[in-house]
Amino acid sequence: LPSWKIRTAVEPDLAHVLALWKTAGSSATAGETPGGLAGLLAHDPNALLVADLDGIVIGSLIVGWDGWRGSFYRLAVHPKHRRRGVAISLLRSGEQRLRDLNASRLTAIVLDEDSVAMSFWGALGYERQRHRARFVRHADAKSSHFPLDLR
Ligand SMILES: CC(C)(COP(=O)(O)OP(=O)(O)OC[C@H]1O[C@@H](n2cnc3c(N)ncnc32)[C@H](O)[C@@H]1OP(=O)(O)O)[C@@H](O)C(=O)NCCC(=O)NCCS
Image 1: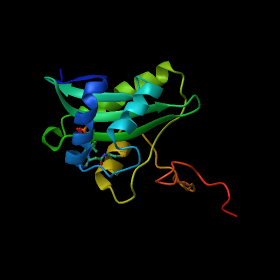
Image 2: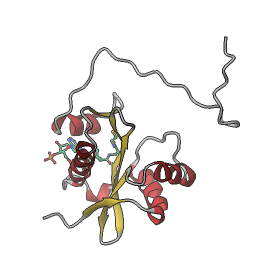
Image 3: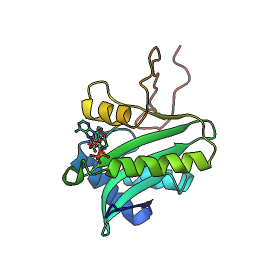
């Protein structure tokens, strides 16, 4: 049996999760602040899973459900604890949560050049989608608004 347990993150975990992301070398994205993570939990208290080894956060996964699709973000495992199945445990727990919510399609965004992450998702039964592009728009950094008068 694994010596870690997968549980839902609570507020005191958030600083540890942010530190883990730095140590794990996962690519920085928007919302990666204590306030951003607190906002996630305020929106959905079950959205952030952590792998807990004797009270230390060694892994994380955001499990998003918007009523339409299930989405995984920020899968990360501390470098000292890799290749022991921590990420598999996180993902299987996240899948269980989404199954309970009746999600029928689960997705993850992976960087093209990240061969480790590519191997992970491929090994876990996820297929790379072809012929699709992702369009992204970022809020203005100062106002947090999306200006509407672009044209
Ligand atoms: C990707 C990551 C989360 C995997 O965590 P992990 O706990 O070591 O993964 P697991 O032990 O559960 O591995 C499960 C399977 O994934 C694949 N895998 C994991 N790491 C791999 C590696 N370095 N090279 C090739 N395949 C790998 C293997 O198939 C592995 O099964 P195996 O060990 O029986 O061969 C971890 O390497 C990490 O945090 N990387 C940095 C952040 C990142 O890239 N996150 C993914 C964003 S999409």
